[in-house]
Length: 213
Image (cartoon, rainbow, N blue to C red; front, top):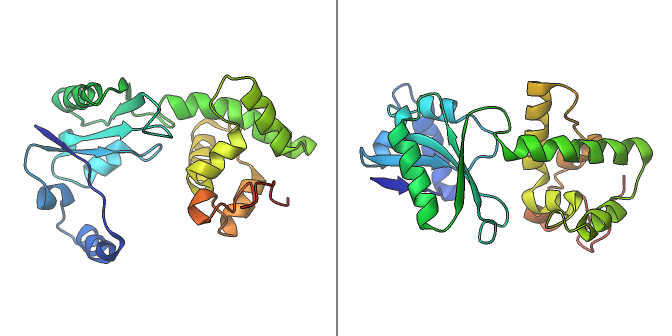
């Protein structure tokens, strides 16, 4: 059995979208062997829904790395409603083979880590906006405590504001207002300022200073 991680070049996307939108489609069947596993690095998309777009949903599993993937050992292996035990076992075995620490979980909004992480970061986001606190001082304080690798706002820039915002909105929709969606982040995403992926212009400017509110 093989686990296949596929990246799609930008020029191929229109053709792939036409294939996905066609009435008779199964991307996994078209581009892989029958025993191949489709593993998604998503931090919030539904593994069950991804599986529903194939004829082999039992071969679809979440395989979520954490940033930076070359350093962080943890991998979330997420089981959709149709993911088979054989597929989960293959994913765990592969994670161990590349010297990662796998944990398995059923599909719930936020999986394990984002649900825990965002419950804490939500309080930081909320207090920062309600009290007008300095994001730079927050990042410096959290970093100095040595409980996480970096401050929450700097991490958001590295991950991409659009990705972090999507997760925050998804968690709020799923669990209510105990998960906070920062208005400042919504404004930055609307302006196309997504952090490192847009040249470093996001929560911080490319010069390393907090962006204007």
